[in-house]
Image (cartoon, rainbow over all chains, first blue to last red; front, side, top):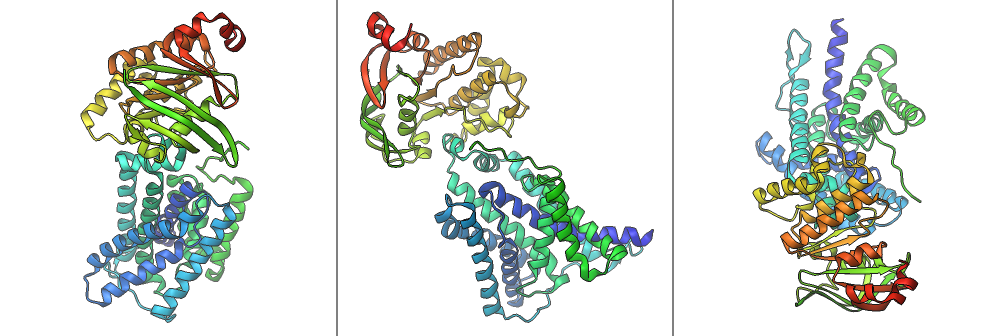
Length: 289
Length: 237
């Protein structure tokens, strides 16, 4: 029983990371209707920026905030420079651009920082808490991601800019008729997604270690979470991320060898797509043709 | 009265196809202009061209300034509110959020809040449904919401595309009554596209009849109403 609870809680901690990245995927998906395959590599690159800052002697939390800010600007720039020119292009073009972005960021990180794994510091020290139920590391990760998710929720729900971003994603033509600069809303959406990804990368790096391929597995789990919750639903994607995190841990502990965990995520993706393609909370996109 | 909107030799294009072949018309400050014509005559296209939603050429002046090269968002920010064909509802947002979107470019918070209350007075049905998702509204309620959302801009020019489309006579009467009120109270000028010619001519002071992308008859509403032949052959009443 103790082990079950322990594994569940540690699953919630990894789930928090998947939930963040799943949310980043959904934010881009709602605006562009395609999945940003480069989301993981963007997060990885952000994590390298944080690592560089910390190596240069910047205190951890200052480096954290600075990295989030830099990633936001980076996300905005990527949208303006790379995505904007293909905005109205067919979906296959988007996919190719996303894959190109993935390869470029991956190679760039390898070229600048080399492919050797680096240790990434954590401010939470890995101490057991509550009779070993949960580690301080896991609790810290859960706390940081929950704070971020709540801030995002408040932003989208209660600020005029958040409302305008939702409107622009939902009905761009009508949003323009309200005077909303839709192009900028998309760019800010990319910035936010990149910032959210940066938090996920910084949180996961102490566990996975830092290397250019660190996010490939994480992105797959996040993708499974987003699909399970519904790729069109931010709340659903967050919940899906948590579910996948817990499932991954429990399945890895009790059912199959942990080397096979990634296949479980793929299986989950296939099952979701077959049984309920819109996910638990998503809506099916109906379009006139 | 000085013209608020002046359009000269307006041409509009869908891809390579020319849909408007050089159109001249205007809306007076505080006036109501109706664009009449059959389906496919190009009425909606005129509205889209004025608001910069499609490729266009020619001269469009709003309050004396050229807007024929401006982006939709900039035209809206100058005070042109457009309730589009299909109503442009944000279906996943609440009724009140739809209204807030309409006032997005305005910064005076208290004035926006009091304008929202004013819209609820104009359209009590919207007040009842303020927390409801706009997609769950009936057609008539969505049309009311579209007009209210446009008015939230405090526009100088209100552009309406077929406000009576698909609605019952009572709802239509209510909507046209509100349009009259708005014009009197808020001094909003209106550019109106309408299939129901008799209704439109009662409200408007000037009218233009379009046929396949050209204006064939222009005049005051009175002239339209008195000309029996025009009424019979073009307006069908």
